Image (cartoon, rainbow, N blue to C red):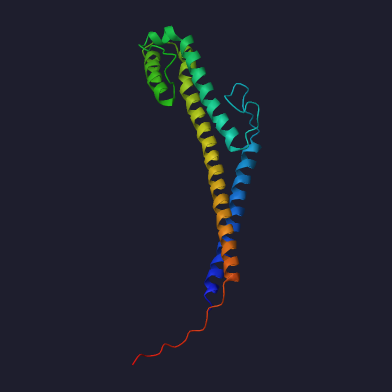
Length: 193
């Protein structure tokens, strides 16, 4: 068996695996792009970056996830500030610099629900405040889905990059094997006397 044959076989395997990885990575990238594009999401004009672009790549997905969080926070602060007196009646002080997410809004909901149950707050007055927690939950779900698509793009890019490296190395090994000199025939060793 020639010494270059295993090198050639390794090269072909690396080349084939590399090409397959590039194809798989491309399919994952394309699938993620098509799924995001099908949603027809446009990054809002008030986004920190990529305003007005269609969400169909990792950068626009990040921009959309970012602005969803900003909108949810602003909406929560506006609603809470508009109902500051009602919230004060159950011992809640609105801090416009605080983060109002699903967890922190849970404490507010508990206090407001207590006010509804004991009759100090009407259900109609409590409704906009109680709805904030559901809005925060929906925002968190949308952000998670967008971040998942960003991860999918990253994995696809990693697979493509590793596939390119594997293919290059496989090709190089096949070239090395093709130019390697044939191994000389082994000569039997003479026993020393």
